[in-house]
Length: 158
Image (cartoon, rainbow, N blue to C red; front, side):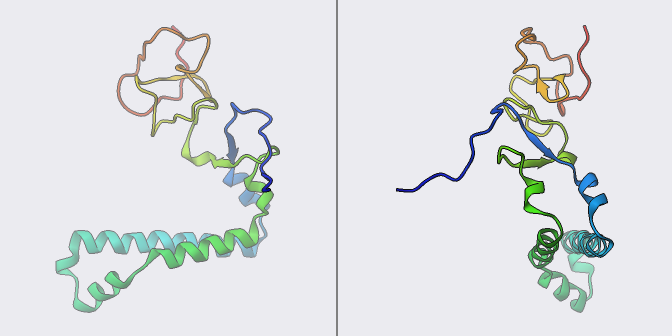
């Protein structure tokens, strides 16, 4: 018989957030330096990939070969290793064992999980900073004043 080690969420309608800036401030300088340098290297590597796509036929044979061989997986693995070494696992989990989502990704509805990148259909808007109009019991007008585009962060007051 297998037991489930996952805890039942205290609030099933809650999306917990990971505040990278707050965690960054708690890291030792050597961890900040390693993680920061690897993050910069990763973004520089993405630039290499973009140049290969955009200008591949105008690159020298040596640059073209090196760009084709570039593999961001190696840098991502090194960045993950540095992160795991520096950041306690508990920082990534809420008290009830649920995962924490990066706060830099923007608002997420605590009930349905929609976001500015994946809004409800028909489109919703923010009734509260972490509750969309489709999930808000007090909002039942079926009206999105913002039309297309990312779900706006401002509250509708009319």
